[in-house]
Length: 508
Ligand code: UN1
Image (tube, rainbow, N blue to C red; front, side, top):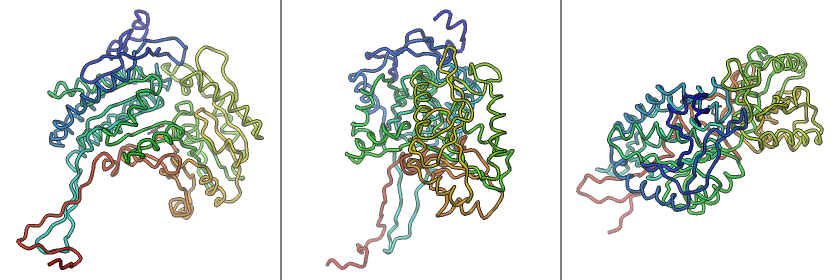
């Protein structure tokens, strides 16, 4: 660790030790198995984290139960003020935190910074929200009566996040959940444990500085599925918010819904960009590049399918080939790098095996297609020509492989956009208003995110983020997403001296 500290001084700044306990409930402890946290750029171990055991899980939940009422009874704007300070603390740690994300997750520094910024933005948003979350007053049909909606916290909220956004996705959930008055348990991906620890420390320091028990925002790191399984079977949680694969999401959904618990599910995407005949090709090219190779193809919003009008197909493919050849692949912390490593060696396997299968299904690699012969989990961003209805095109490979396909009629391309099981993000490049409104309308894109002349990824926090079909239906961050973190009571109040019944019923 001495050498690691010398090489990466930001680790010390963020409170990362050589060996770290991975459970927090106001205090750090852990009795589970050890996780080795490695650097995807070199394959070398950075530090170790001890995960939580089943008993540790129960200790954490007990603390959540203890802290829940005090937090729920704290006025929402006061909770908002604390969330504002969390945002500020992250602002002051923007650089070290982003560097840690690049080091452990592997995304380039610019995108890591964007991710921390997303957390900061959602804190600002939640602070404002803490003064505006409100119910309605509804006219009653009875004299001397009023109907009100009251929103109250759910109590315990479980937040399970993925490796690809190891910081921001906690922010989307926790910032909103906190102002709503819930206490939360965060289980981050075990391969990004150091980031989980660093973020937990920032949040804890702010809570403590304000005289609150920092167990309000508790954390438990895996490894394996034991702790996660306990969490999703635990009826004491009012909500489980999960980001990850459709397969795991399906399991979580069946567990949690079996006891009528609530979920927010942010699962797989299989996002398409359509380039219509009248599209601005310069804009399209820049968006496609960011959407297809950004975060090395590991965003749930990554563009995986590209439908190009036949008249633009050849020129666009040529420009893509040129652009892909100039992309700098390498150390995500190095200046100028656009593509970092894949997160794990198993993702590299998914890439190579995926390409084998693509070829079996008639796909032809037109750009890239290889693993890089160097240390770390590096692959070439790849473009493949294949039929829109090849079975593999309907699955999500979480690697930088883009399928490119030609179309004649825009209606066909819109139908292809919708023919996959996933429904997260989609985008149409066009300058034709008729195309735009068709795309947004009932027979247009069936996704949760429907863009025009904008990439499929890089959504702003102000909108509700999430998707339909196998993407899970959840919505996070902006708009009215906060309502999912609260329970609504419809309250009828009689302020008269009579007892009239609704629907005019006479019960005398
Ligand atoms: C994810 O990949 O899990 O829209 C989330 C985006 C980001 C979030 C992606 N704001 O690409």
